[in-house]
Length: 219
Image (cartoon, rainbow, N blue to C red):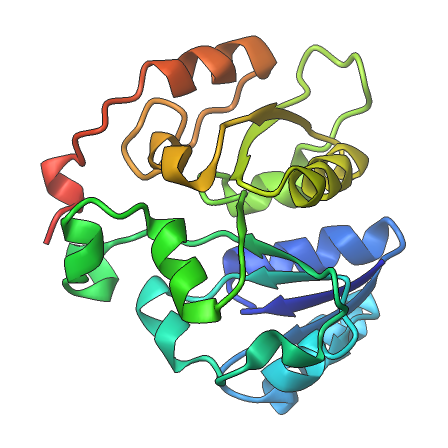
């Protein structure tokens, strides 16, 4: 699959490592320019490019930049992607640590719904509560009792299946976390956030989430 990754921090970098390792054609971009990604490209075989180049012809795009920077992504970013491009959003809202106040989210809009509005394209929320190191250190084969399950939320059933199949190929199980309006269940400080567990425990953690955003994650 042709995959574009926008953002090369801890999550973006390790997704680049894992996805290239299982044979995908990965282009990766960051805000500082391709010349800053030479080491990652040399290590993984990914192609270091600009954000616009990362999405050109991509069948799947991962947006993994700080939430406050989503509105700064190029206008029409996804126009040159494949017609049925699937977009993964890994972002979280950290108002006190990083993002500042975002009124719509403070008023109850799920983070990924806000991201959708700025991208002008539906997203699938995944990897937002995953430890970055686990992406490369924790893959396990089917049936392994230590295989971790990740929650995946989104409104497009076909796109969600693509993401769940990709995560399965990466060495992880998945749990359907509902639509994007349900994706608050995997926001920071919910029971599933950072949980290293199998499908049954992840499903229980999603069900146990409270719709009230924790005070530590409000502006």
